[in-house]
Image (cartoon, rainbow, N blue to C red; front, side, top):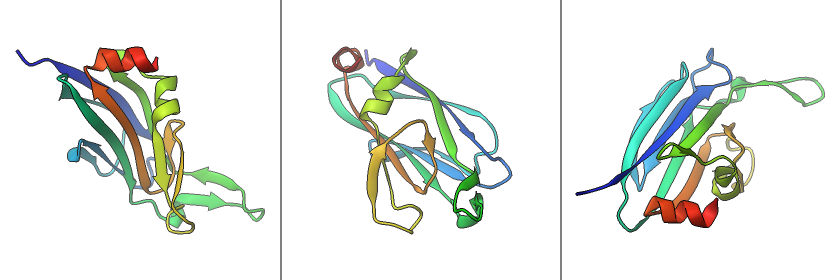
Length: 145
């Protein structure tokens, strides 16, 4: 019998009036292509729980300069971003584990060098958030929670 891990999350936008897209990838295979993100979406998919290394990625696409409003002092006053909330493995919230382990890579939408940052729940530049994990999932969670 094959056992699986249920991976779930909620995806939304901070500004539905502008079309942002999001791709979700697992181990190099596209799981979802939400284009545009135009409402709160609850996403669920599974991964085999046999011994293995895995990579979960969220890729923001279609972000343009007009999605960000800047005042005369060069301060952001409004911005369209994608929010990734309530990430769970088998109904167990990852919470701070996601913040601690996920990496967010982007180049400020082509205006700067590639940078790697922590992920705090929002993707604001075209780029990718990556979480590496291993299965069996309960052993990985014991090591990281």
